[in-house]
Length: 192
Image 1 (cartoon, rainbow, N blue to C red):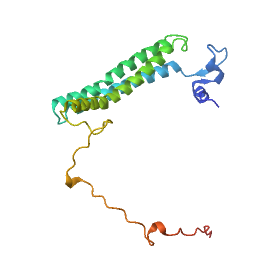
Image 2 (cartoon, rainbow, N blue to C red):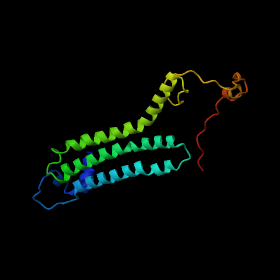
Image 3 (cartoon, rainbow, N blue to C red):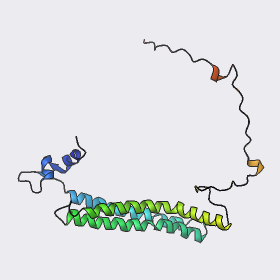
C-alpha cells in the first residue's frame, strides 16, 4: 500500500478519480486546494500568535528596559517567518486555487516552504549565536567572562573552596559486597 492511498480514499471516491482531470463518471471528492489553503492560513495565524503573545508578557517582566527590548527583538525576528509564510500562502493560492495545474505552478510553493522553515530555524538559533558572539567579543576585549552555554574553550572560572567537590576514593569491592554475590537461580513459574 502506498502513502497516498489513505489520503485519496478520503479525498475522492472512487480512487481513480483522484488522478483524472475531469472524470466522465460519478465521483465524490473534497476540495483539496481549499483544504491546503485553509491549513496555510491557519498556520500564518498561529505563527503570528506565537510571535505576538509573548511580547507584552516579556515587557511586564521586572528586568532592565534594555534586556526586555533585547528579548522582544529576538521574538520579533519571528515576523520574518510570518512574512515567509504569507508569501507561501499566496503561492498556494496561485498554484492550487487560481490555476488548473498545481504541478506546473506549484514549484514556488515548495521554495517558499523551504525558505519559511529555514528562516524559522535561523531565527531560533540567533539567540544563542548572538549570546556566544557577545561572549566572544567580551572575552577578546576582557570586559566579562563568556556565557557558560557557549561551546568554545575558555579558562576555568575560579571556584570558592567551600563549593569544591570533595572526591573520596572508591572503596575496593569486598567479599560481602553485592557485586561479588552470585545471581539467584531462576526457576520456572508455578501454575496453580
